[in-house]
Image (cartoon, rainbow, N blue to C red; front, side):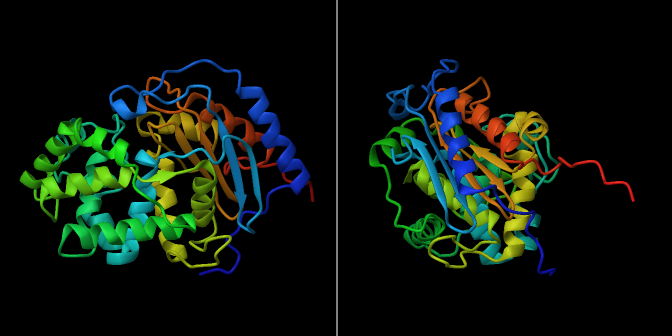
Length: 325
């Protein structure tokens, strides 16, 4: 592997800090979107809450607003689970068992499983993430849960705990995911008990994080798997490469094309209002704002990512004209 994998560096600390503050002031007054209601515990979120955090690969942190407000990680867990599974069983086996192609359909689509001849989807949608959960090492539910919880904690650089209220609320409304797991079993696309796997997936989504945590988790993916503060090599650099590739094509579900067009970076959203954006070699951006658009993505989070991607020069596809010889 080449030693020069970074795409560059963030601007100076003063510039990043000023732009993070500007983004918070600019998009804080936005009132579009609605808080998720289908999980009762999420319906009580304060729509005014808005946190931004940027973590560089060197460990610098720039934060504004409610960056330390706890919330459940939800679907932002998916790329980190995929990374841990790839590290555990090898990325080739993970790709063969889970698939990597975008479905172009909503995150909880059953049709995405049914229409594929081999039953594969990708680890960024519920079906693929449930299948990935079943591949966690261990012969028991608790062994698998320990692997997942400890792995996520290593990405965050601190122990992450379960939000019991959110977990209980999701268990009570989890029939669709259980149906997806049962369908996967019929297609031989799950490798542990469907009901137990669904419960593990639900627990994983209910882990409590902050915007601060997510920025560091995203920066770890941006930094070849090495945590910017702890220095721990959580996963190998090639694993980050494949995880970011799937995030580019499927991280925002059916709106992934629009996201890439506007932001030009790997991203992932969650229905609690969290969102991460990864700038390879530079750092991670995380936001928290509960009001969502029709596709289940944070409205303020998307506005912030678009603004900072442009102002910080992060878009992977942007370039300047070549200088004449």
